[in-house]
Length: 111
Image (cartoon, rainbow, N blue to C red; front, side, top):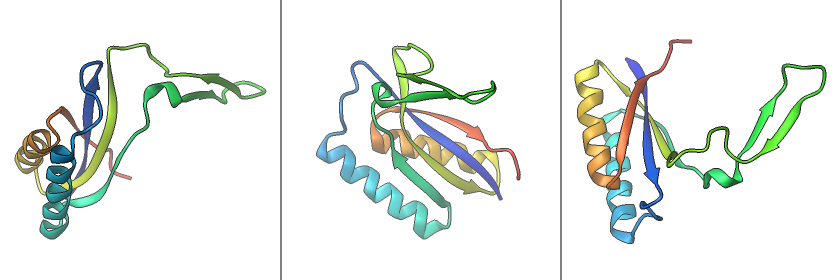
């Protein structure tokens, strides 16, 4: 089984999830778990809470704020397992519907 990351895309118009959206996401999460696709999922804090860390020099450099200034940002994610891309795409479409946001699907590299 391949692991995929489904990134939930937010923009300046998204706002926090409504009670109905959160209930739909919880139901989707339970279905992912029951079907054996669930690995991990969570929401992320706003980009303003980010700290960029660059440890490539002699001393690490810490910079407040997001790495990229953008109108869109990742507001949450799922890590799922699927036997092939078609299943992952179907699950991403369901996730998008349930959270009422666009979702980016990307395969993870094997460890």
